Length: 226
Image 1 (tube, rainbow, N blue to C red):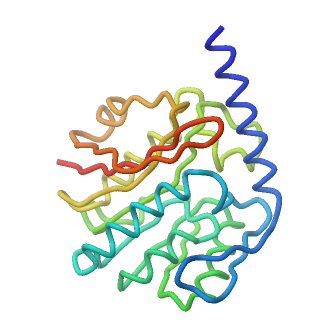
Image 2 (image 1 turned 45 degrees about the vertical axis):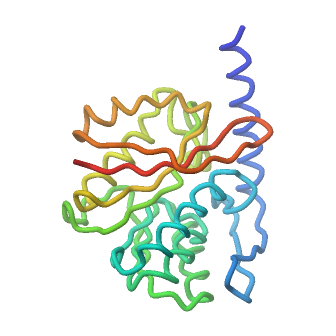
């Protein structure tokens, strides 16, 4: 019975996120006077809980340690909102996404924000050297369901969470030892971090912020590789 209810909730969230992804709209980012845009097919940077949770951690970490994190990367940049927040504190941002719609959206918004950002279209991080980035963050797909369409890859991680695990493992490879990866997961995710350990290696994880939605709980965490 519990499993059936979870599947229904996951499908409801999938539908809501799909609707939000299809709708273009304008949004504001704290500290900027201009209004930014979210294009059609791009994961919504507002109203999801995950954006709020990770942006809170990002602002706190970068405002306190801004001279430590010089080279920063976002994996799955979407509309570029998180990269724009990070650009206020870092000298250089690399924003990566596998969607051409997201890359275009981030390029448009980074120009509006006048941020120094390299935006790269790629589904992998093979172009990045191991242990080369000071801070890597991502608002990855975290729903435990299989993608049914192109747009579903924005939020569906597979029933076994394989896309989530692949993203986090890649982030841990490129971040410097002792430096953090910032990411989020849902109370519905069923993520086992031991699966990431089997692919990557040893690491420490610390939950630092959470956001309750009407349907689930989103937790932002720091992951430090050893």
